[in-house]
Image (cartoon, rainbow, N blue to C red; front, top):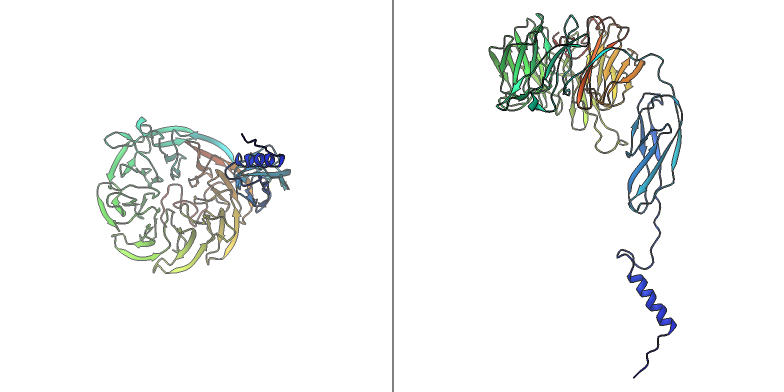
Length: 509
């Protein structure tokens, strides 16, 4: 028998081979050391002031992998795990903001820190809260209409439609006057209200339902349905408005059935005509002094429609809009819209439909991919001196002279999807989708502390005859209606100072 001898050298080689074979399949030879990610960020803000928007933009890197987590410390006990968070310091002070990032191997960076000095907020107190009323459902683009005696009318949606809960309500001095439920379908579920109500000179309240495709006339005292008409088209965003003598109602149809722009008599007994019945209309129309109705479709066009339903003119604006049209003292027609990722704001000649000027809001090259500056909801308000105010997804309220020259801009805390409201002192009020309500002077300066009323504000504010400001916000799954007090004693006298022109939403020149 032969004797096999293993030398120390051969044994060492065998042990090495055995070690390598037990390594992870992705490792060839000895494991390599990963490179830790590097944390870095920018602080982006118009002003470093308490209550105002500050963006912390991540610019971290990882040489041999990719980042998977971000841990922010704002220096005051608050934190975030978003990649590039937006933050509002509740108070002024000197803070150290820090960021630590980790990559796909679990390696963590060294902490990157920057000092930020936050100014105290403006000295003016926020608007005083007179009362608030929590609804039993959530708001969906319904802005409050207000009668001469301060009764607030607004629609909303039940989370569970099977419970047959109310979807429209009247509130006065913070207490419910009455509520109403519009029942839809064979399953008899609560309908939804996705548009704003209007009030005629006799006090009647008009609102439109979504699924049942019906316009209702309600008794303002008790909420009873005095009349109704089924238009066989879903209605959203478009507030019913009226001819100068209030004999005719106009409203846009969104989907299903004939769609189109509808005219009925105000008694809701006769359908007069349907304009462009194969198109969707989400905008709130405006009525000129001569009875011409201005309305925009989602087919890229704005139309001037004669009272008999014939087309006076049409002009291309962009790609989509659910904004409210406004008319200046000289008859100029203003509309805001989106055009892809861009926003557009246009002034039209009321006689010919030719453009007087056009403003385009385009995301810059430094904006993150997918950023939009569109203006798809809200719309312009016009002061008595002709200054026009408009906001959009650029997160700024911008003031323009009647010739289209920009006067100033004011940065909000989120996209603006509401129409500003102007009081009799020229001050401007509006909410944003971050839930903040702002008070701005005619010169573009903050005059009162912004107040967060909820998670989002999608309803345009109304100013009552005594200067009370009514605004609604969503807070979680429920809407809340607020009555706020400033130094105002009324709505601006002249111009087109709020959504649909006035607290009754008459929307006519």
